[in-house]
Length: 289
Image (cartoon, rainbow, N blue to C red; front, side, top):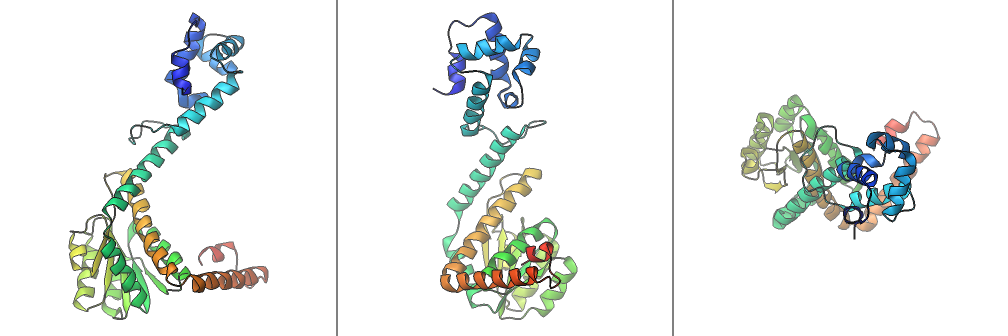
């Protein structure tokens, strides 16, 4: 029996007990931050009454009740991912976890494995990867740089509309462009995809819409779940696009596990030597590698 069921079905409660129990059931996420004295003030009772009510419910005291309530809340599914005003840490954590878990599951269920394999083959055959994104998607593009470099693949980062325009004219045909666009309809991304298509430069698009104009112009489009608009939509796309890219990186790393392990060890040693040797490096510099 969970703690809330236990509280609801406890017999022989006094009116004072019921006032305390009612507050706990109505405000479970707030209980963790209260003392017995504060709960007594909110319920117009006393600290000793709070302690007696907790013991009557089968707990050793108020702290024991709080621990059990918190544990059950962490295990509970929130039922909705819609944010309410002034979410507490516990409910915000539960809803965020539920939102991202559901989005990742949806991405996994709809993942085009043949397209994923084709993308991995394109990256493996390319001399270098060019990560292309603008706006908030540049954070995801930097994630590509970090992961793929760890797999032994050179990555260049293009993250402004101007640089994408120049890159579209200059990109070598032995590179592969990995473009990131949530909707695949941004004019800069569509123009880039069209120019690279015309110049026979291979392209991979990570997007929520594999039927978008940019997707239709790309060599391969990797779909990821989005599900909703608004500020939470950005959170979802960041998670699902990251999952798609992480999957692609795992395929690359697994192609040469020994080489990837050796590269990691060599890079770590080199950076440690430079940092400890004070050769112009600091923690911010190391964080970019």
